[in-house]
Length: 458
Image 1 (cartoon, rainbow, N blue to C red):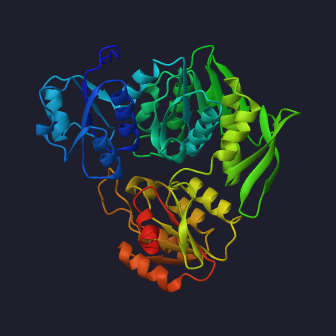
Image 2: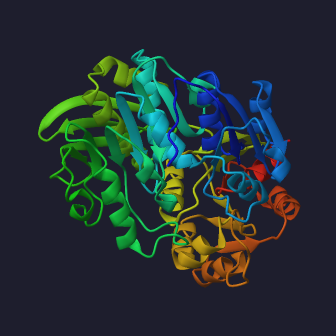
């Protein structure tokens, strides 16, 4: 594998630069003195921001984008060898790095490289810890998989020896990292277009945990099924948290205010640690915050900074993000695209003041929809009303094996008021006619379903 020499900045080209992670890496290298260019399939706010910083971005991936002055090429997992731009760069003999490989190389240049992994909660937990690190004036470098108001984007280039990032298991990308601290929030079935089964996923997380050095730290949720399959062979220090009474850290006296915001008492075994007040809702966020606290304490961050950082964090973009009001109807957007995430979001919404809940859901990828068809129906059945959009294909091709109509059929058997429309304008017209006073509308999914709520608010 090609090794970057960070003492000699060169010209690096990103294929798929508009992605949330790729754009972050591009910004880090840009601020390190690199010449940065890239390509993407469409214009976006991220692309516009990069252009404003002096990055040359071509829309459309073509061989002509690979100019003679490019020294190294970075590409995303979504780019395949038959991609015209990728194939030309490879044929030209240019050094090629995947996004994960480049992120791993950047990580090696920090004394503390913190990686937040898990099937769910990575962005939120990374954001919580970001707020704590900022409250403590540690001047960290941060790469987060969402837009965080505290850093005005998804990337912050700091001057200290702390690097914080999300770590995604898809295509085993996090196995290219060089962490000193890992958090594993949960391990469930997902990305079944890549992994064979849940045991294959557990094996991947085990390899990730074993990347830690002996003086490293693994923070892991004790509620994970078959936990020992993930921790076996790990030489680093292991600290657990969760609902299990055997965990090192647990939450007690969890309460919610009239807006559904959580507070709790943190215990280390039988010893009271501190009372925590969060500015986000949901029990899942209680445990996300505990993972962030354990890491912060390992870095000798004060309780005052921990409390201030968590209190200041009121969510990231597309994580139970309150978009606004349509008359007396509150519109929220959430990135949930896995059954467990959907269930957690709907359950969290019950503590938010409203009458009926409407979930407008856009399934993400055909493979995920097929693999979790019954689980999607079970999770969505917690809502009073469900409106389904077509499946967001992302990197996949429609083979005709599964559709949103299949989810609708299952929900109707459960007696749930369910509707399906193939276009966003049809969904918006239906919602305008049927939403009632003090209802809650949640646009939900990892695709572009957020546009429905934004269009309604216009």
